[in-house]
Amino acid sequence: AYFYIDTYKQAEMSRDEVLALTVLNAMLVETWGSRIYGTAREKGLIYYLNSSADRGKDYTSWWFGSQISEKQLQPFLDLLIAELLRIKKGLLKESELAAAKMYLTGSHMRSAQTVNSLANGYAGTYFYEGRVNDFYSKFPVRVKKVTKQDIISAARKMFEDRVWGLGFLGTISEESRTKAHKQLAQLWK
Image (cartoon, rainbow, N blue to C red; front, side):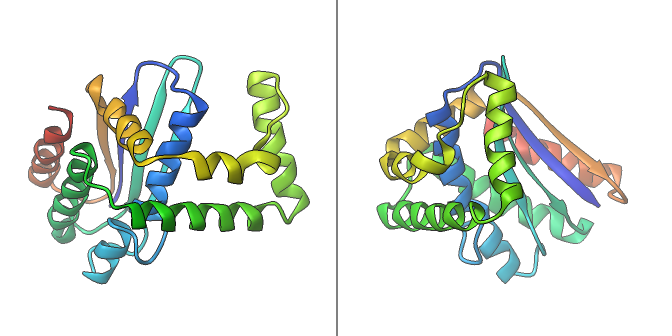
């Protein structure tokens, strides 16, 4: 079944806070060695995992989504919860932060190599905020400035309003869906 886990902040967080969540995403889900995706894939729990932080005019969201079997759902959620609780407790290594920054900077440099990527990178903020994006000229400098405390603070903010959801599309029993919901609820306590 496909699943999505969403958490919302009932306010538009700053660009720097969303960038801190983006750095955290690199640590958690974007590489083979990442805390959640890398570990889950190594254990055979999941094939892929997507995650992103987005902001709107009056909210910020952070989501995780993938496809998973019912048998692997609980162990995967145990891992996801353990890692997110570690972040909320401030357990983050400087070496992980440095690796995530290097990965994001490299990804950024690679993404600026096509016309389509450049156009999309500028168009979004121009139409949404009426400003010309500094993404391609200043992004590496902004990433370099993200601190461990920035990441921890932004992650904690995403859970403080206690607005969240879990959704499935596919064959997951009601019992497993209910158990998954109860498992995840501890993140918003």
